[in-house]
Image (cartoon, rainbow, N blue to C red; front, side):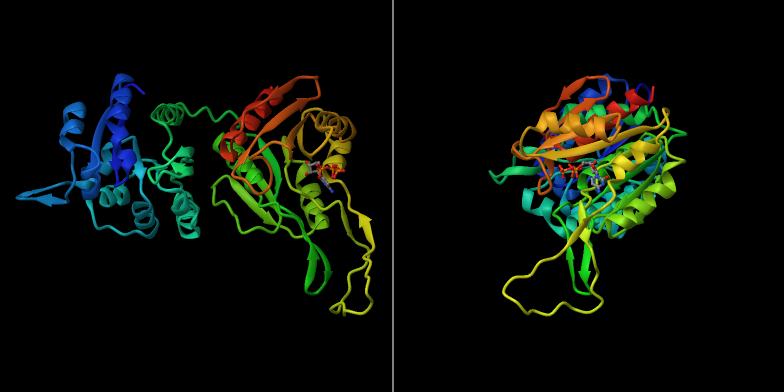
Length: 396
Ligand code: CTP
């Protein structure tokens, strides 16, 4: 980080009180730091403390008396702009190009990469508008950091806490030391559920959201990998520049997309919750209600992971998932063997906070060589990082 120029944009959130400590750590690592703030941020943290630490004036207004803050020069000065804490309001304005304060003017004129560290209460964090705005920021190639689970200013416990200062320093460190360890590699990732049509208005589906698989695709892409994401029906998307998304609906469509792309793939991660069975016949007209009981005949779908395992070459790394609620380890090992995968990521339904409906996951990875690695309960983006670290080792 030595010699790197960083602008920190502070917006109005209680987490702003942590920024002087962040500044100290960045200065210690040899970075030069300048601060811009929204007017409301100044009520949470003292500009005087920050100007004393950084040895630069803290800028809040676009102009004051006869001086004008040159936001264009500031935006061009930095190697990185970090918006921390990024409040719900500032994120919404950034997503929509609103420019009613100096921080936003610097953001809009910044020619350097921008990293965003959100901070807010859980209900705001979960609101669809905020999540859409974050997607919008990602589509501008801003680096959007996760939030942490913990105690919030409201007294509630949940997601929305700004990442701890030490973690922010790690993120900034790894930004400046981007290793792009998977540059020149291609990956195929499946994510989300599949829907098996019964008639024109009904289908058999499952509760998968695709969150885990999308996080894996994004983490691979951040390492420089070119990713094809085969995504079942879900409201989630990812606008990452290194990810090409192919939207599919049924297990058969997912299989076809995977077999088309597998030959050119170095890494395949099968995280989709694929239907194991599909209706034997598809009714072309709506099925009418008749008898007291009704039976649907189902036939097995092709197991995509197993199919790819049967044709994979020794240079291809193939990762599968196992979602179990009993005899977890023995079922996971059985899948590892039978599907010829290089590793199986086990989620146990017995672990609290793990599975489809959660933002968190707790995994164990079983490798073909007998190594078993257990991980703590983490947010899905953090779990994705653990999985990708393992993949990088398997690629060596
Ligand atoms: N899988 C697949 N194609 C299918 C079914 C599953 O590629 N038709 C993959 C999943 O993406 C996952 C792995 O197989 O990586 C294990 O899926 P899971 O549903 O846990 O296990 P199954 O093998 O389907 O067995 P069971 O449902 O009996 O546990």
